Image (cartoon, rainbow, N blue to C red; front, side, top):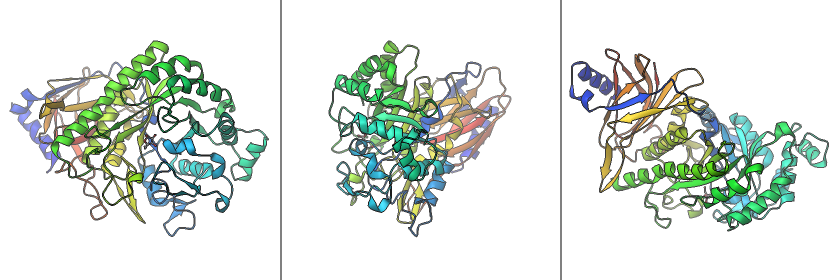
Length: 515
Ligand code: AHR
């Protein structure tokens, strides 16, 4: 189906007094009232030692036949670079609270082999350690987010890791870093003290965690220009108590509080729902579930506002995305799932929510970058495919560092099914760093196109130009047999008599520059 032609058709009908204009959803962008800057780190990624997320998926080692640079696959790194990954969180997740950084430095053949107790009980060779991780972020041109081990580690271990990475002194640890091949300190953008301390990170209460955090943070010393932003590991889902306690008790010692929320179609952890072949009911339940992110952010921000009205602290959603049942025949501990058009829609809906709260939400990390949960890339030996989620991230690149602009939607119907409903159109606008006005639109309805009349007071709009991501099936996905089954297509429309109505196809993500 040619959606560009459809857009033109709607404009013709509009010009000739057709029915589309009267029914159109109204979208007004207030370009004169710039809001918060959308931190590029909102588009951050997460790479945990989990399944084939790092080993095989990205790291093959320097001796591999798969073309690589310093052990990292050239094809995967090239694709990730093309989507402008701004930040990578590593080494976990739950893995972080059992990771001892000294196991991952020095000659690789001498590193201890451990058991990955969280994820499948497989051997962890420690081939990827601190230096390899920084090679990866260097290759990507991304910043580093390192997650410290509070669960089975100590203040001393974390303090020494921060010293090893960031010290420019002649200390033994700084010289060990030099001996291991890195003269200059590494740039650590963020450092988290623990992960999910309420669960896999130690089953703590927020008060107990706060006491430990205060103690550890005291000893994390780094030269001013290399000091990472310190992150306190917060709550998840409906639980705001962590944000309440942490924003009160850690305010002077942290730069932000993390929060985790996963989208699960059935809402049940034992049977989460399938990644492909799902009924429309689960399209709907996935969207209603993911849109709860907005309420979670509002409630956590309100808790932070009480203790930090100046908004010095960030709310860092450092794990989010879809979590389905694992694919049949795969290791249940590897969390491998296919990725479809539904995931791209989920990603775009979350981006629009993050933009709307950019004053507080300054960093997020989708879980996870390759082969795990809602990934950007799926690999099999030397092959790789880009997922629909990859395309959504890549389409939204102009929003990295852009300035959010308020917009209002009127006459926006609900897409309803069996008593559940979500707004049909979700949208976000921003002034890009290149000065252009960008608009993102998501049509949540899998069976109905939507006409949207765009209005920017004080500006005569001539056209919109960009790309659309859609497909015939809700679970359209790329596979090794059909790697290009779903990918973005050009999208444009011109104004007629200074008025612009665009047709947003059913189940689609559209990102355009408004000119
Ligand atoms: O992303 C997978 C896991 O989900 C992470 O390791 C953990 O933090 C969360 O529970």
